[in-house]
Image: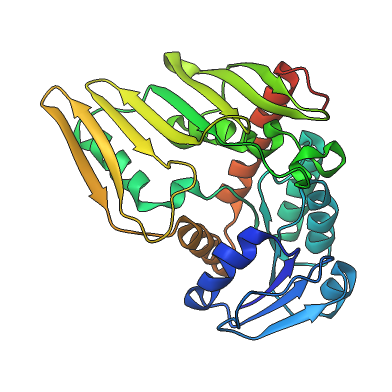
Amino acid sequence: MRLLVLGGSDIFFRRVLPILPGLGVTAVDLASRSGRRPPAEPALPLRFFDDPAAALAGSPAEAVYVTTENSRHAALTLAALDSGHHVVVDKPAFLDLETAEKAADLAAKKGLVLAEATVWADHPRFSGLRKAFADAGAAPTRLAAVFSFPPLAAGNFRHRPECGGGMLFDLGPYAASPGRIFFGAEPDEVFCRVLAQGPLVETAFSCLLLYPGGKSLTGVFGGDTGYANRLDVLGPDLAASMDRAFTPPLGTALTLGLNSPAGPRTATFEPADAFAGFFARVFAAMDAGKGDGLLADLLADARTLSRLRRAAGGAE
């Protein structure tokens, strides 16, 4: 497979480019306005284009990865789909539900895969968590999430509303996706409040999402505190706790804390790469021509993110 990358994000050079050879990608075409280059010679051929339009017209790639500031996702994704490419787009895929639905409709009509790169649950620890609940004969009913970090540098695009900045866009997908993943449902009710406001965008928010059957997610998310990144998953007779839940690091064994009537225990998982797991799953869907599940996930999270923004008083 040849991959066309639109954008030169840090996440592409640091986490995605190194894994591509092991996933069957044989060459990469790259179009970036910044002109950024990889810090070291990549392990596969890398060709550069001056702009995305020229790349879409001139690259023989089967798939496109859109990894730009949030405000450019829509136009680039729609152009890539229109030209017949499968597309993976960084989260948040789109800044409004109408655009998400338009892109999904185009992908479905053309028989193309469209996937949002929300990768955190592709780490093996989450398979271990699901097995722990299955072994206990239980299912999750309550989720409690915290993802907050110190302020970003002043020049970061996440401070700029015209670039799709603000923590509801940056961290909102981590509030929208856990209920889909663990409950298999979208929320019945959504409550959200901005906790802190920067000069131009919100810098922190809290939310409560209520799901069918009395299930719930509570969350605190922001970019104005010390670093915290954890998820608690609770159910009958079992409580699980994970640190670094939403950004599992490379090269580090991760633990899963489990507490049941038999007492507490800890399961340890060998180092793994959630990005590799996600892209392997997406590339398999492209090969099989079966992207319905990925498209449904994108739309479900887009609907929930839209409701979070409305509940917080944001425009759609």
